[in-house]
Image 1 (cartoon, rainbow, N blue to C red):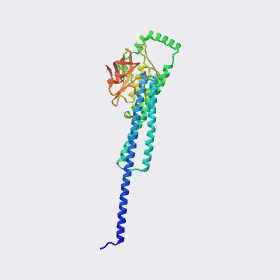
Image 2: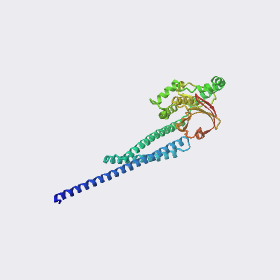
Image 3: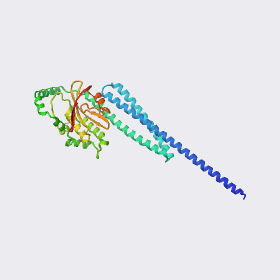
Image 4: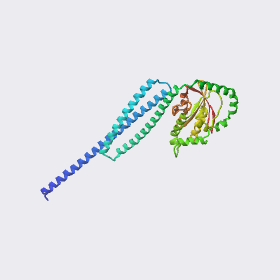
Length: 352
């Protein structure tokens, strides 16, 4: 049977239309892949910029520690901080530019294949980096505030009348210090009992700085940081050079905003125990100048910490994954630890 002219035309038209459809589909797929690749590249660029920013923030934190420890002069610190701040500002501008590009790409196309899910994962990773950056910024602000307060303290002078008064009080205390020490002396059992996580004052402080539904595994360091900064800013901690034992109730510490180093350490340890940190304890150590000093130590998620309210140093100034190295690098008034004498909490007492 012969095919007439009209049938030939119809067949040709169908073939042409089919070819056009196939070509359109292929072009569409190609455009989607190009769009996805552009989006993937943009996200990777943003992630790289955030990693670079994180390193700069770490460097900024390190410089602040060095400046606090007086291993860097004012001019060097100022220049270094200025350079880092300018670099961070430039990175932020680049991140904003990349985000704008990403927005334009996503407006044009919204693919839903495997690469899209990879992008979602990168978004999640980026969010974690952003949160970490926020945390670092808070720590750096804490350091900067500490440096400002340190500068103010250094410029203050004690009036001569106050110095004379202090000398007079010292004479009185020294005369009766043997009687005071005899009455204030405590047994090991009594010392352990001084760590009181159930104390009402301790509970009130914990309630003030821990979230509702507090979870030790998630909220501990955040709650402890807030509490530590509160005690650091509120309490005037006196170095007891008179070798007189004197124990202060927690309620008096908060009311009078005054304590000595061992009482403040006992108070902090009690708060840490109330936050469910069973590893926290007091460490009594001997320094290079033969002076005795009290600190609070703990271990949380494979990291060891030493907390020292007397120095009013930043929260995580002294930490390390190796306990021995931590005690080796700790210093008080430029003096290192030569001996750990004993440590204790309400559960245990240990001589070293």
